[in-house]
Image 1 (cartoon, rainbow, N blue to C red):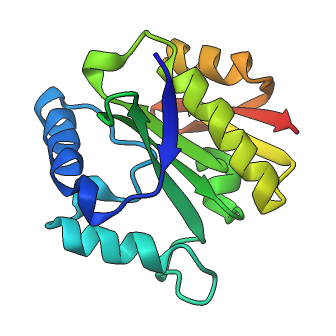
Image 2: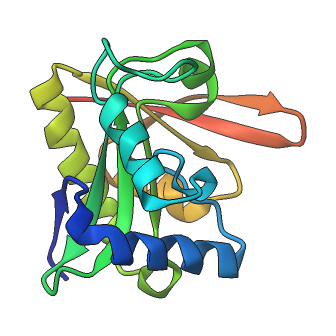
Length: 171
């Protein structure tokens, strides 16, 4: 399956709402979605997404970030991936530069690996050449996605009941 990363727009409103509903229905974590799970409306989410693109308009508590939609050859939304332009203390330990998710029906097809590879190209354009990507230790599929893109495990950090694996990818 071929995928590409595109910037969100009003054209993707219904697809984004279906994406969100699918994650809620399945009780999955909507990583890399720029807070889509918490937004009450598309318009609210889109305003936050736009503000977070720039250091001068980033919302309090956030860092500048670019969130992309991963769409297939039919323009169906199969995943989302977020590139944080810099790290704060929390992101340095737990969140990393990149977060991503793939809709349940499209998992185990290599989509996350392709999404991460495309996001790493965007990191180069942003001037980020040492990229931190993290995952929960129990998320073996995500660990393989990171490793398949050159991720080298630096360490593991415990936070309450979970263990976060911290991988670095040098571009």
